[in-house]
Length: 498
Image 1 (tube, rainbow, N blue to C red):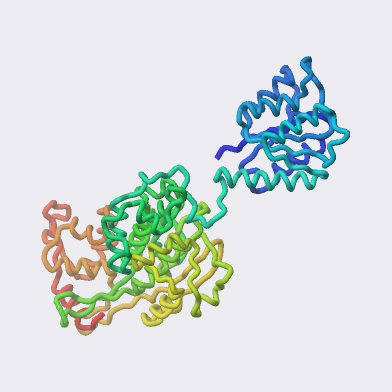
Image 2 (cartoon, rainbow, N blue to C red):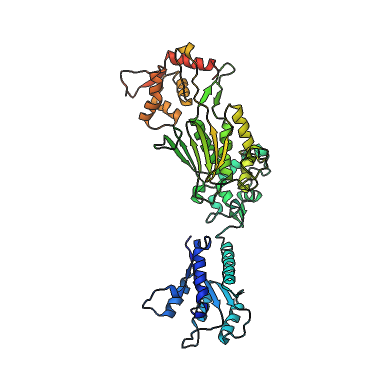
């Protein structure tokens, strides 16, 4: 936001030290300097302008008038009125926010016109008295913080419970609310019916602040949440190595509600990690097993989205490396939790309680503090190390991946092969001849050259698939078909229950 100008009144020598102290304090305080810019008459360089015209023009333009009243009334013009009186009257007529501070408790010894001005101000607003500069600074600080709270420029409650500035009920999606009602009723028996109104649902979930949607409401049901909360997006990246390095093979920035973000980020990870295809002996569909359980990936990502600090500029980052999955969020553990306690039974301490409740109602999370313990158990069951938790410029969960497994197919096909999930899917697709475009859809790729070089060519070099028109490499009718070796490979994989 643009900073408000504070006009600090009085050009009398009586308050020279106080004015300078206030200016230095306002410019040095980390909070107040974000919102206020002090104006002192004595800081203005020499100029060909009348002094009285200058300070009255500044009062006209300022957002807040701070008056210092003492014993002296000050220089009187031809009408017998001082600059301090002129400033106060103009600020009053222009409906400026006024803060008046009176020095000394005893009014005896004041100029009679100053006594009258103090009484006039007292009839219009609450004045504060001070004796020392320290008392003045403390009183000004308290008044300015109260002003920021009254103007809703700073929040005094949890972020998710405060209203989203510039947002209205029109920025919420009835479609997304309907999805929530259907799923929450089915998952947790949410009491409101599916034809409940938007206001009824938001009221029930405590997502309204004086009739306005809160930050949580926008994050949960907003048509375009990132229009108001830019950093609420999720950034996902896949690296072939173990370090962050360019070029990044796959990079996506996902936007939408918190439900959308979780779903998209989880799908991103699951599409990149390895899976093993089992046998069809028990049914028409061959079972699959991911190297990292989907529940672990989902729990880590939803925790990052639900418990992050939304007041900062950072976004949740999901980074998949050759040896690990890292999920970083801009937030810290609550004071009642420690990294050690995450590995023990502990209570649920949501960082954004109003955001977490709808996620619980749709079974995206539990609220018993069991999420980290479930992740640990599922990783161990899958033969993975325990997840690692760390606080480093945010909260980081690291899930170690298995070393690449090479299926032993020597007896069946005379070689050993290590296939990615997409390559296995392509082999299944090529049981009947398939065009290039349909194979690219399996991997979600759009660059034909990279797809051929990184996916198809290795399969053809291993003798698993072949071209149907090998003498016309770029033919529009070109298709790809599983070789006998490819068929043996699929049979062997299913027989080994990989």
